[in-house]
Image (cartoon, rainbow, N blue to C red; front, side, top):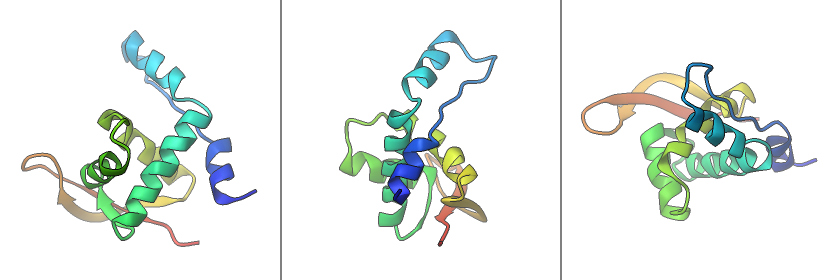
Length: 110
């Protein structure tokens, strides 16, 4: 089993109980291989950024190479990647939308 297979086999998408029906439908659509595919795209984008970037920077990089992927799909993939120990949050902050700073994420080296 290679690293990508591992990502796909543990992919999951969730919505909070308080979220509207549309959020639950979107989460259902992103379960399994679809979520794993997007997680891999997000991880690849972070690697192209030198292994470090904010959710906004990652979103822009994903859009550059996969314009069909909705920008709302990018940042929700970071937490599952963190749980799988592919990425981690840092104490640093970097550019986000507008003047807001965001957490800088970095890849975890094996």
